[in-house]
Image (cartoon, rainbow, N blue to C red; front, side):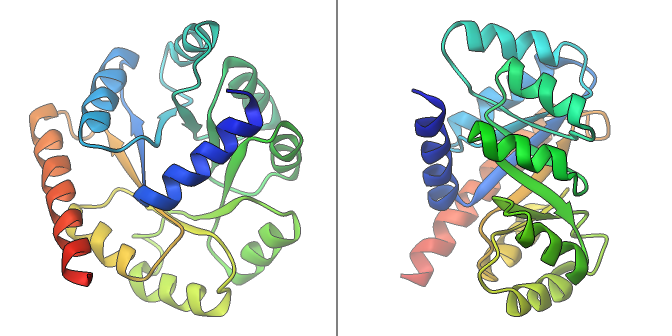
Length: 215
């Protein structure tokens, strides 16, 4: 697929699945192993931490095969963004607003989500025509109540609450109808790989049950 097709495919999967998983850890191989298990649960939108050793080489390996499987988060500078894009990032999350990154992503037709918390920052994101606004850290700053306020105030903005959530809280955010929810999974803090997989299975089961109940 060309870049425009990748962009449109990503928008489609985000709209359908409503979930993005952002994985961090000490080892790129552990991150890839977890991503493979997440994919088996039916989720396709996965980002890897820019700070994980070996990330760039891994992305380039996929790119040489004609694949762009992973997004990248914790992109903090224009240089970081250039490296991630050239390495084959599928999308980019930044923890703050960086005009140069947003403009580069628009030029490259690469989906981007800029970190923001306040009405001023969200308005700036909208002026810069960000693809989406990552409310980060959503759980620590205002939680569901603050996100509900932002959603009512800026109904046309594509919001993505971003933080480390449990499955129940993810469902609570989904009920507020964001563009998507981005769950950060940090293997450095939660080294119990099996427990992480059990939480994913539980989330998948609860999400399916919630959809059926709404119908």
